View 1 (spheres, helix red, strand yellow):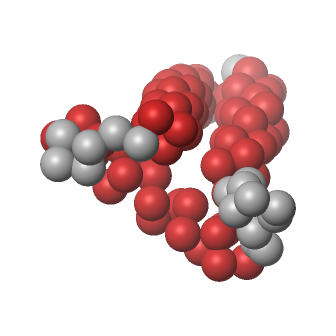
View 2: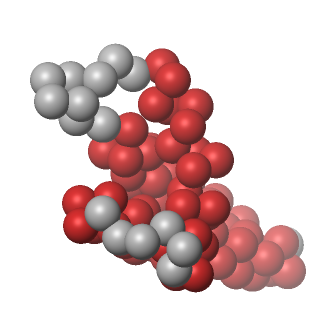
Length: 99
């Protein structure tokens, strides 16, 4: 069982790092949208390409608020936090229970 336990710990760590990195990418996307950066910049295109698949479905379901305020990054960020706190922690607990 220790092999399955080690696998779950490794999976939890990788998932935690991926979610952490995506949170920073999402923050970069929000900052880029505030400063109205040039879309021809490769960094801006990467930020849009990595965040738009998650933001677009949320944006379709949420109404725009006064002044066109887009709350979809906040919703996606909260979902990332939930996954980090619930899923990653649950994987760690399951791994340690198997030892």
